[in-house]
Length: 510
Image (tube, rainbow, N blue to C red; front, side, top):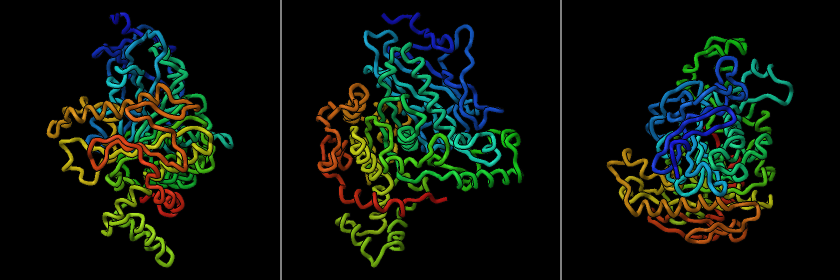
């Protein structure tokens, strides 16, 4: 029987007190690393100082500095209090003393590595936790605090040990916390799934590619990961030097950089920032993530990966203008063959703007699923590909081109009810809820059962692991309507072509 005593959990760092909400235990604002402030700014996360007595774990922890207005507009809501002291996580568990340890799912939020927080309404862990898993969400360093390079900071490291991807190290520190403590919350430290969307999905793939993350998790789900190349360290160093000059620090020292106010960075022009990708070439990510997958060097772990039908809805954030994609093709093609080939692959789409929208979607998002699945197959570990094309019944007039970037999240996390206030003008229907339950069951079954030996996932339709010839992709929705079906050789020719072209045509636009 659930009682008040169960609201207290002893972790390796100290005693926590949480809440009981709708039959699920909730612990918020748990510190998983020391505050990365002062001399710890732009350093790997350090251990938490243990505390005496009981720590309140009923309030969200601080979020990293960011644009509140932008996060509320496109990031899922109000991220709460901002601080450089932002390394906190949240746990939802249905049982703290189950008869058998429960699967663990760790959500890494998206937002272009510039906005977001683990406590936003779309990411609430209660709905999935109530179905028999432990859910963890986390905050991590964003923007310049999360990804930064400068020659003065390089001097603090020995050769080959320079760190620039502090956000990725934060995520690893959260996973180390899970390994230390999740058993106290009823979770199985030997069955940890990391999952995320957009830059959260890129984080998942980067953790698959980083040699430092080995053993911290056991499988991953990447929702709408993009093919944009990681930023070379040399470029990040140039950007860091420009940033220092912006603050009148011509020959900046590490001490001067760390003395700059934490809230001075996020409003800066994008030309002075890194992202929305990681930095390649440091100790955390020695090789670009795409190179690791192309050379089949990622961790040998199961992966689910997919994207949405109208990902072009977000490309303006990445500086990609869909209307200019076809113009770019014309400029780079040889004797007109490439554009003719692309038009053949999009039979019946003649308008340059619409063609550009679909090409941009497939080159930047859909192809990432094919690239990752092919690499998984070559690595001898299973992958599952999906394509999300469902639109809530009361909002179909708003999304004529399909599912926008991020709109699948309340279905995969089953958080439609948590968004009731935000969606008051376009309320979710019972059919929407039924579809969310079906979709999220696949996510849960992946977390429960997927292993390196799996050949299929359970669900309303049995979902076989991806194979190159069949190229089975699970469609969640079709033309906005509810549907579950396997589609063979999904966009096969397009993804094969774009896999070859994306190095030349997918670029960041500053």
